[in-house]
Amino acid sequence: MARSRLLPDNFTLALVATVTLASLLPASGAVGAFFEKATVGVVALLFFMHGAKLSREAVIAGIGHWRLHLLVVASTFMLFPVLGLVLRPVLQPLVTPELYTGVLFLCVLPATVQSAIAFTAVARGNMAAAICSASASTLLGIVITPLLVGVVLPQASGTVQQDVLGSIGRIMLQLMLPFVAGHLLRPWIGGFISRHAATLKYVDQGSVLLVVYTAFSAAVVGGLWRELPLPALAGLLVVCAVILGLALTATTWLARRLGFSKEDEITIVFCGSKKSLVSGVPMAKVLFPSEAAGAIVLPLMVFHQMQLMVCAVLAQRYARRPQAAAPQG
Image (cartoon, rainbow, N blue to C red; front, side, top):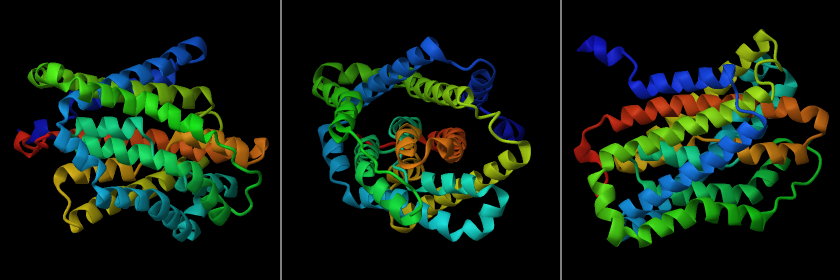
């Protein structure tokens, strides 16, 4: 029994296989575009099902859970920049100055939306609060990230010209609209969703695997394994691991210290420790000269893959807790 607990579960093995596949056979060109669209569709289905699963009381509680949202925003836009600046004397010697500029840049980015919510679903966390918190982080990042870049990286040039209405529209279409549609159809399909919950969990896990493959493919095609010599890559891995480990530890400790439930803790950990590759790459192209953007984005690419892999394992550990601890909604 003790030995079996040390063996990786099927989902972890599937995750490793997905990363290996993306490294050897990354999706690029038309295939990559197809997987990008497929990811959007699968995540939309995920939100639709959870909208049908959650009761009206749970949705209202998720929107009004201001203490949780405040902690997630503080972790995303305060804790990360502080970690990057305070640890700079220790971590910067491990990488080049250009790479550490990229590390500071990732520290001021908003949280991811798709993977944070998918991991929360796998771990049986507070889905309503996760959708509200992750979406709000992305919207706030449109304004807060450029301001933080000016404080943390005053040498950055240019002005971020984000399509605010376009970003809001994409979030509404991809996340909120399917969620609301599923919730409105709950009286007719809610029973089916509940009866087939054990089978439908594979949609949650499948969405995570698809996000990992699509994101890792884009990183490999973008030169993840050829941009860096081995010593610099090893140093970058250490830097990203230290920052991610401290962020996960801090969010977990704060959630427990402040008396949040286990479901809320899961949401705080997964929404408060993520950084968005989708938002970060366009911002980097605007804020930094084109010849420097590659090295600046590379830490974000490495951190993004690392957070997906680590949080996938954490989600499985949370999911193995007794079913009685699941949210009643």
